[in-house]
Amino acid sequence: MAVVQKMKDTKVFAEECWSELEKVTWPDSDQLRSATLVVILFTIAVSAVIWLMDVLSDWGIRTIMGLFGA
Image 1 (cartoon, one colour):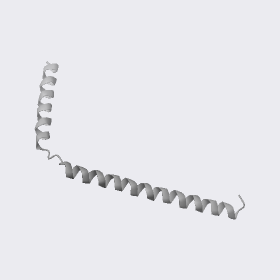
Image 2 (cartoon, helix red, strand yellow; image 1 turned 90 degrees about the horizontal axis):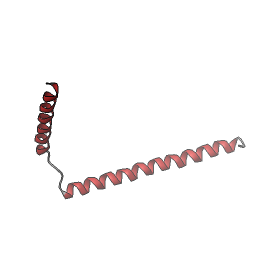
Image 3 (cartoon, helix red, strand yellow; image 1 turned 120 degrees about the horizontal axis):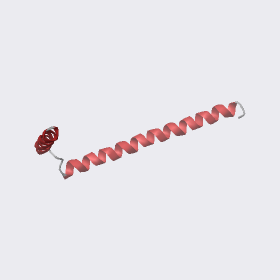
Image 4 (cartoon, one colour; image 1 turned 30 degrees about the vertical axis):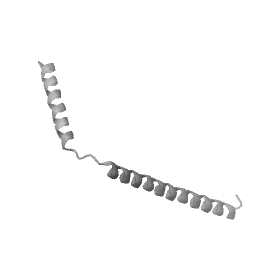
Protein backbone atom coordinates (compact mmCIF):
# COMPACT_ATOMS: atom_id res chain seq x y z
CA MET A 1 0.00 0.00 0.00
CA ALA A 2 2.83 2.41 0.85
CA VAL A 3 4.49 1.72 -2.51
CA VAL A 4 1.34 2.69 -4.41
CA GLN A 5 1.06 5.94 -2.43
CA LYS A 6 4.74 6.73 -3.09
CA MET A 7 4.16 6.21 -6.82
CA LYS A 8 1.15 8.57 -6.74
CA ASP A 9 3.12 11.15 -4.77
CA THR A 10 5.97 10.91 -7.27
CA LYS A 11 3.57 11.44 -10.17
CA VAL A 12 2.01 14.48 -8.49
CA PHE A 13 5.47 15.88 -7.76
CA ALA A 14 6.57 15.46 -11.40
CA GLU A 15 3.37 17.13 -12.65
CA GLU A 16 3.85 20.06 -10.28
CA CYS A 17 7.48 20.43 -11.38
CA TRP A 18 6.44 20.49 -15.03
CA SER A 19 3.74 23.05 -14.26
CA GLU A 20 6.30 25.32 -12.56
CA LEU A 21 8.77 24.93 -15.44
CA GLU A 22 6.11 26.16 -17.85
CA LYS A 23 5.90 29.42 -15.84
CA VAL A 24 9.62 30.14 -16.20
CA THR A 25 10.62 32.94 -18.56
CA TRP A 26 13.81 31.74 -20.19
CA PRO A 27 16.37 34.33 -21.29
CA ASP A 28 16.69 35.10 -24.97
CA SER A 29 19.99 35.12 -26.83
CA ASP A 30 20.82 38.76 -26.10
CA GLN A 31 20.10 38.45 -22.37
CA LEU A 32 22.18 35.28 -22.16
CA ARG A 33 25.07 36.91 -24.02
CA SER A 34 25.08 40.01 -21.80
CA ALA A 35 24.81 37.95 -18.60
CA THR A 36 27.72 35.78 -19.73
CA LEU A 37 29.78 38.88 -20.48
CA VAL A 38 29.05 40.28 -17.01
CA VAL A 39 30.15 37.03 -15.38
CA ILE A 40 33.37 36.91 -17.41
CA LEU A 41 34.23 40.55 -16.65
CA PHE A 42 33.46 40.10 -12.95
CA THR A 43 35.66 36.98 -12.85
CA ILE A 44 38.53 38.87 -14.49
CA ALA A 45 38.12 41.80 -12.07
CA VAL A 46 38.10 39.58 -8.98
CA SER A 47 41.11 37.64 -10.31
CA ALA A 48 43.00 40.91 -10.84
CA VAL A 49 42.23 42.07 -7.30
CA ILE A 50 43.40 38.76 -5.82
CA TRP A 51 46.57 38.86 -7.96
CA LEU A 52 47.28 42.44 -6.85
CA MET A 53 46.80 41.51 -3.19
CA ASP A 54 49.17 38.56 -3.66
CA VAL A 55 51.84 40.73 -5.29
CA LEU A 56 51.57 43.45 -2.65
CA SER A 57 51.66 41.02 0.27
CA ASP A 58 54.68 39.25 -1.27
CA TRP A 59 56.45 42.61 -1.66
CA GLY A 60 55.56 43.60 1.89
CA ILE A 61 56.76 40.35 3.41
CA ARG A 62 60.02 40.43 1.40
CA THR A 63 60.60 44.05 2.50
CA ILE A 64 60.01 43.25 6.16
CA MET A 65 62.16 40.12 6.00
CA GLY A 66 64.91 42.11 4.24
CA LEU A 67 64.99 44.59 7.08
CA PHE A 68 65.88 41.79 9.46
CA GLY A 69 68.46 40.20 7.16
CA ALA A 70 66.45 37.10 6.37
